[in-house]
Length: 180
Image 1: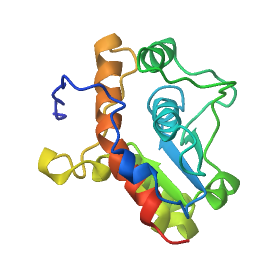
Image 2: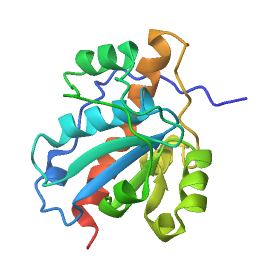
Image 3: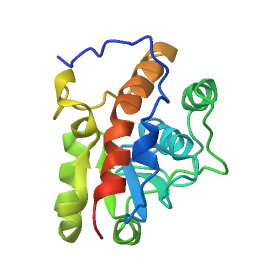
């Protein structure tokens, strides 16, 4: 049985501004999920919005079983819009060596996604981390998989956005402090 994430009153996009004021040595982050239409594009849009050009970072997403060329799900687009984030000209894409070579940080939504990337692209294994590992340890979510919201309704997508939002400060700190 999967963990049920609790919702918070705080908006998803609150980020510690001091983390964003530092220069960023990492050039690219790639979010990975299954089909690249729900979780990873949501994370892509939320991180792009949170960064607001404060760090020189390219943000993208891909799926381990993506059907290339699909748009983000309607629910993902709606949740991004509600959080004042957006994806421009988004099309799903399959994880491949070129995307991974360009990524300094690969953030997987689940352990299964991370394992697939590591198994098929072993040269990139050290760059792959789980999204929930970026959440404050006091939340007790380290190592937890981000649940797939597809077909589960708006509330499930909002919950995923909440989890991603909890991870953004940790991801931004990683982007700000990691040496290339």
